[in-house]
Length: 240
Image (cartoon, rainbow, N blue to C red):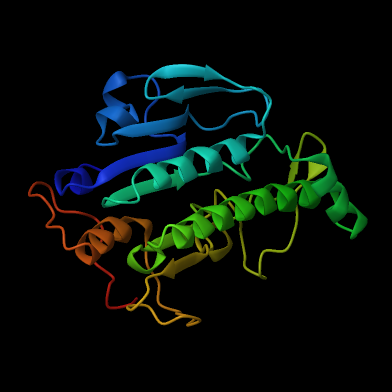
């Protein structure tokens, strides 16, 4: 975030921050993010939660957490549409605990899915709808053509049984899952939209790594990286 902030970008993060919850030096507002709305730690209840909004606690009003994160992210985009911005939206869905609107879960159950799969798919559907809403806002504000949108995940699905609920489901036929370094655990979706640079509808088989995104996005924005220890990642702009 500091890289973009130093270049005049407004920086914000909405969602899960699992990079140090016990030391104020690692709070998002101390790590280059000017705006933060989310929770510190690995997981949160989706209905009964306490959010950290720039260091101030905000208690749940019962709204589904994924929708709350979408609301904060959408508001960030609207506030800063007339200036360069870097927004990292880190939904915790579909992380434990498995909770989703009943009507969505029921629809997947009625389609023949197990309870674990139905819960997971319902959680993902709400997240997808949130991303769609933010994308619609980018178009509404006329900035979609000048915005890089990157969606990716951190690891493969958790499979097996938890609290008596089986989470086994389709994983593209790959071996392994979360906690394993087989493809099923580390190969995840990555979708990039960069109008004028990335051809629409192209499927790319080259491998990239999470650590590649910082140098890649900085280079795309024309921002020089600061000195210091070398980065683990590389600019993969040529792949895009």
